Figure (cartoon, rainbow, N blue to C red):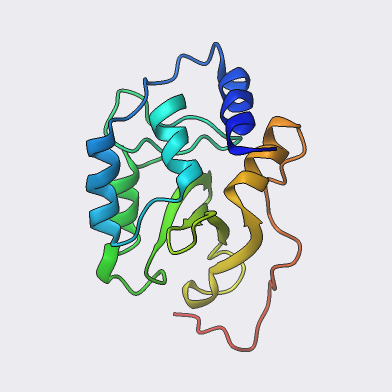
Length: 169
C-alpha cells in the first residue's frame, strides 16, 4: 500500500472511535526538536491527517495532551521522558515509545529511520538492557497489517526470553 492508501485505510478503520482531532504542525516540530530527529513521514501524516493519537491496535499515544489517554502517559512527550528522554540510558537515541501494550511492554518507533522502523520493548523477558529489540518492520508495514486484520500484537516469538547476558538488578 502507498502512504496515501494507508492514511485513507487508517481513517476508515478508526471511523466512529471519537478520537481527538489532528495535531498541529507546530506540535510535530516541537517534538522533533525534543527527540533530535525528524518524525518518520508516515507517522507525521497520521498525526496531522488522521488523529492526535488513538489509531493502531494498541492505540498510539497522543502527540500532545488531550482528554483521551491511550496509555499511562498523557502524551508522547511524557512517555519519552519516562524512558529517559534524549539523554536517557534506557533507549538508544531516536527511539520513541509509541504504543503502550500494558505490563511494561511498549511498541517503539525509530525516528532515525525515514520509514519508521518498529521496535519492541519488553523488560519482562530478561532485563532493561535487553528490553529493546528491532522488529524488522516499518510503520507502513505495521499499519498495513493492522488495517488488514493481520497485525501481530506481541509478545514477539523471536525475542529471547532467557539470556546469560542479562543483568538482573
